[in-house]
Length: 145
Image 1 (tube, rainbow, N blue to C red):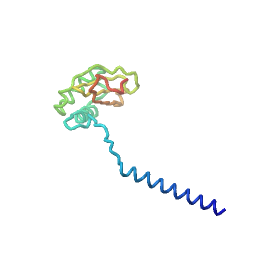
Image 2 (image 1 turned 135 degrees about the horizontal axis):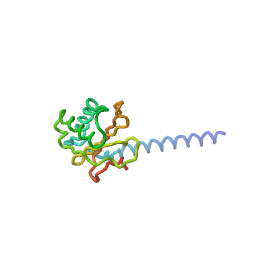
Image 3 (image 1 turned 180 degrees about the vertical axis):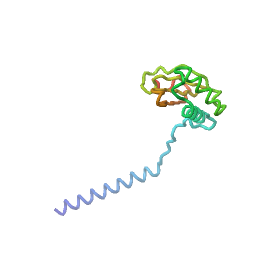
Image 4 (image 1 turned 45 degrees about the vertical axis):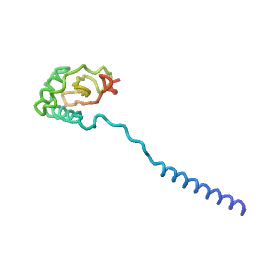
């Protein structure tokens, strides 16, 4: 019985020493992984400011009297220009090709590498959605696929 307790003690000590060695090796190695840069938050990017401007115009001005489709985005852009001149950089673009429910009845505003998708499921209750992305490689956002 004494041999059993001695073996169990040695196994516990070796397990503890192994965990200490692993912790020390991880501590010496460190975590040197850097997260990828987000182009939306890069310095000099006006995407977040433009999103705020269009969202403010959408919340304060849009209602069920506005027409649908491309005309909706044209009217939204004209209201956003009254809030900030940053909206002048955007043009009404091609609608989303996605079949997703959240992108139903959508229109888009695009600038150089920024795409804003405005969708409206039920305009009578001001149920609008604003989706945005930075697209450097293609015209459509990744979530539109």
